[in-house]
Length: 332
Image (cartoon, rainbow, N blue to C red; front, side):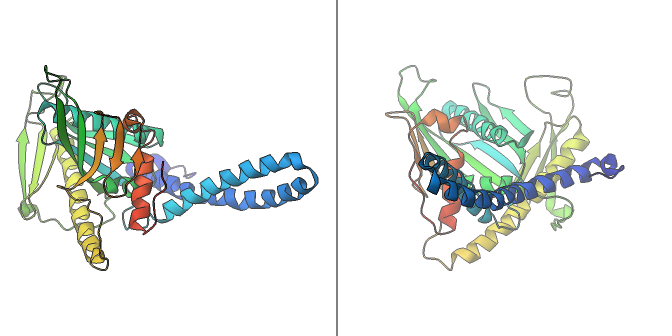
């Protein structure tokens, strides 16, 4: 990074910066643990002579145990693409306008978590619903282990609440589906035959602006053999939308290959955590009480808003990692 020509190739430079962040996320805490252990030994000796230091020893042990637990969780992020960025897509499903609103709420939830973790977010595609919320949205989340954490979010998310769109104030159940793929860089080969991909051009939709609703700049790609569909409309030109859509398609194909490997591994075990589309992985309740519970891990948070604002979402990621590693979740 100290090379004078480092930023001449911006894309390559950004990848190197991302690699550095990933390494620091592991090496930094390990260095801190190593140096702190030596300091802890000295604290123990001082505590034997001065009882008032015992409280300091206890708090330091708690702090180091937390760092160690976080490192152990990161050690579980050992999949081939876990260190990559993530392309996360949210689609409104059953539930009418409530489902569209729920999909928009989830987009804000993941965005808030990403910002809180210091990750960068890039909006790739967003389709507004005419009444409220969104029909679909895709974002790229970039930062250390972004895909490793987010891949467990793939599946159906269910919300139960008193509908703000129902004049009779009835309880409504709505669903949103989440899909997560690793953001693959050009150094990884993904074999996609161009003849297997259909490209459709359409006019971008949105709230208006210089590049909206004037030209057929939005791109939709369909991989015919697998019926995989991606779309992008948020870039400034058709060329940029096409490039981003192809990147999204490569990510989807990489995810399909990963799912095949996971299915083979799952055959070794009697039970398998369901994470694919069509599986209801988590329930969010605003009525009759406020709570969020993961149906796979049993991880439970009694504050709906603390999950939706991203502050307690990480606990669900950690619980899923423990589940995959055969460990039990800690109660919240």
